[in-house]
Length: 182
Image (tube, rainbow, N blue to C red):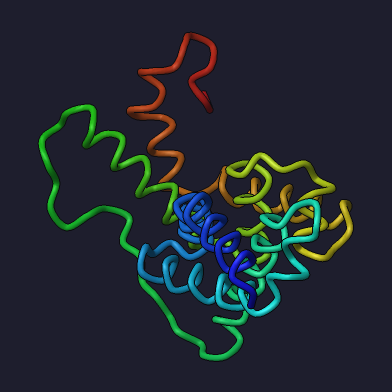
């Protein structure tokens, strides 16, 4: 790789690292797996940076590699992970503890989704990509994105950990009439 392309790649990584790790974290549910996944994706991008850098949206290309690498992780070795719904030690009942409980419940609910549905939810609602952009990243049709999102949202709505959070602490902070299920 030429010096200028090397510098351009390093600039891209520096600017987008935390965003990519956050996306990978939502896909994996584990910070260490997320960092490994991001490094793996960027290593693949590095090998073809000349071609990737010429595209209009290099980050979309990296996102696609993140999703594919995450899927490969489950294909290569069937690792079962157990995520707990509640951390073993509970801090005081302050605002931060409440947010931590909500985050933990959301991550547990995301972990219960199949990889493709999780990827659709992360890309569509966390990354705020359009259905067409998600379809492009995942290599499927917009209709598949819609159906996977619908199925995933239905599962998330029935997840007991999320129902407890929506009926509990979140409801008290929501404006009247927006408190979730009644």
